[in-house]
Length: 450
Image (cartoon, rainbow, N blue to C red):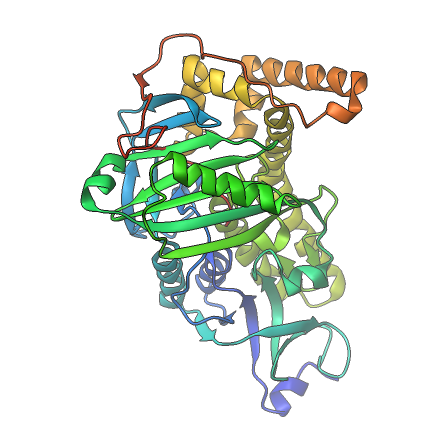
């Protein structure tokens, strides 16, 4: 077919079609629409919609938002309480805000509105079945076809897949996942006296299974309480959440929402594009492996995907489209890919020695300062390891220590849970009991998922 075939049969051709209206999709649509291109967002749900997520907005997320975007913050975090299996509670405080907390339904809806204000169009209730780049549905080599579940076909010069961790577009591209984790979460309404106890603080608990942790995020009159661990430990993860809620003294409050989701991290060799189709955010498996923080990865990869999708849409042949898609992949790997690599190393060490992390963050001021700088967006894990010799040497040392331990006892690798005892050094606050009536003090950041 000629390039005019679609126009001749009255089918419009969009410059960029974005599948998914979460942070990644909205960010991609905004970036593409700002260039004046015709952009369509397809979302299967009606907006606003609930999303299982802690809702922590760290510095890199704020920096990736559209200019003038007003964050609908429900709380501003200035303190973090760390616990190790519910014990050894220590609170660290900061003079300046560490990060903010949002309701994802409101946050996502505002991002979509920003994309619409930039010129993007939105269709909700549009469930995508597949993408085709060859065959009778595709009029020419400059076009891809997005097929909806009802059979309708939408044509585009470029497609951005941002349809979540179970992405159909990711499957089309061939995304491979190397790490899958299960997150469970409850939204618990609490009385004003309890809410005030948690205001401005979050809790992070290093959990009982290798690589697991729990969090409490205060959002006005609701506490978001969740846990995450490796997939395959569903019963243990559920018990961890139940025990966690009980220790906090929150078991008597009825959750408004209880939900679960899987987070997925891509393998290093996983593709980010195929033909005129790019993937970003959870659909690409872009997630910080240690904390499973995904919002900043979604916003940043979405913006890059939108910018490069415009270039793909302008490509006149497959070779040029491939070149632009490879440039997108390079941009993602040079930034987010480096952060993910460091995050994998951090997770490997944390899974074996959570007590080491607890001791460092609560008793070693440089470690706390690094944590604060990362959450504020003043640095990243990758930059920290690259630019600070002490951090690089420390991570290399624990890498070697872990490798030696694995060589000595492969079966025990990743299964030991060393509890290193009372953190050394001066601490900011001892929070030995929860002021909400539980065994641990309130407070902590750690947002799993996009």
